[in-house]
Image (cartoon, rainbow, N blue to C red; front, side, top):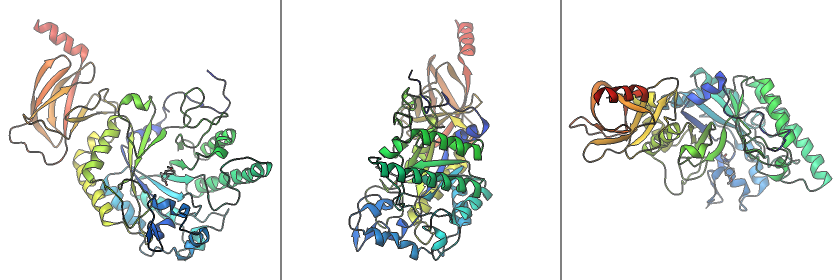
Length: 449
Ligand SMILES: COc1ccc([C@@H]2N[C@@H](C)[C@@H](O)[C@H]2O)cc1
């Protein structure tokens, strides 16, 4: 291995209680809200076909026009308690909220720039209201922060000249100051979700990113920071020069889900996902396919079955209200989670990959295994290839524990589970299987022969 000063300082997953809590979440909410929400993905009657929160980068939008939008920002209908209650009903365990996106507009009254909500007609501290309302509902709060800041004169995408480096040194101090004030003002924060760290200027700032991470963790012990913050001294991101993850979990799964367990390389990870095909901030027109609650339930299950968390994004309008499609997805997911959350919360990879009928999840620190069923074969018999060294003790319906399902062992590693006659599932359902470990099975097998 390469000797690294600013590579990973830990190999393998964090083993502390704060990270165990993060690992138990299963389902989270992302919220993207800011000045881009005012434009709604269009300008001068033309629709931007990029992600709505990137509209400032569209050639049709003069920067001065965009940067003066703060003078209109006044979300009178913003009701953080309603937001938090919608999230609670949906069944999310944590929320990740945009404090500052790439445009640099701060939703908290930062003392390090004038470009904040304090200087908008709204005036009040939005981050504080979100942190307090979600914390009150028992939902942990994580803060999204974009390092790249288009509004700051000292931002650089690369460091080509001495002047670049002098300016970027000022920018790095500004960034450290803003992050320090965020953690001091909102000490309930459980973690930071960094973005905007792909540019060369940041890749050349590995030592700084390392000291910054250590500084932030000294302010809130147990703070959880993913793999998008750091670069090592060679400019590697996510994994250092030795292929070891820098950060408490892998943040590479944006709008995509790992196919197999091998893809997650033994790391903790989250998948952040949009309901439309792409676009995080509010857009009047959602181009392409909009995910249904059924698809979001399947993605949640897929992520938990591979040991990760699924974080679904909501983009409120400039006035603070959510669009009907998002309200519906939240409600329908919540209705499903109310009945089936045992297979999502505190669950992990069950040492078995996806099968025709659906996904396995396993209760953390327990032998209980859940089968989340999305496809029932025409003959009503689920063919179940079991996790290694396990066999079915008893199979029953999570929502009707007294309904025990008949099982037929095919060989020591597969069984049929028969659904009750007449069961016509209309939504994904969960089978709980109490498993027996291989040693027990062998003993019984031997007894039979
Ligand atoms: C293709 O490049 C990007 C760069 C930034 C993003 C941002 N990350 C998401 C979490 C949103 O904040 C999006 O604007 C998306 C795609």
